[in-house]
Image 1 (cartoon, helix red, strand yellow):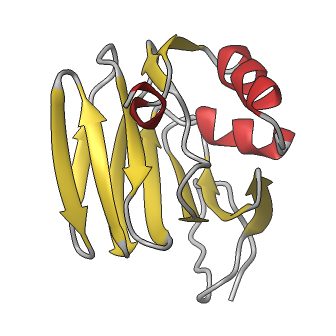
Image 2: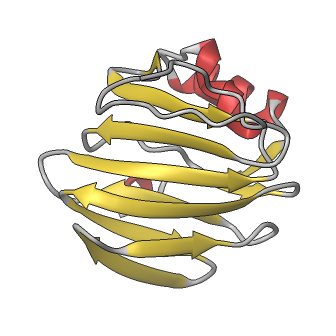
Length: 148
């Protein structure tokens, strides 16, 4: 299997293959990064999710592989279990919440580029906020968990 991450030529990744990254203590595997699309697999525990934010440049999709999550988008909360697929169109405030012990999901974004933010490997909320704004996101509020 290939370890190439750029599209434009065919490649395949075996389970677990891709560039290993982190977000706090979450484990991420970059699967594709190209001007057209980004794809990253994430295993995350509660408390490591991003604050409420807006992408002005990217549409974002989540495919939940394991666990349970609540997706906060606009004023709605959409609950997801393994097999759920959720769309976050650009320009709409959103975040997500891991509601099980952990969750594994794939994030797709178009156009590509924002997935490279995870190469900054933030370990604190301040570093994560800076990484998000460096990649064109606007933080518009705290995580919903912090407002309860």
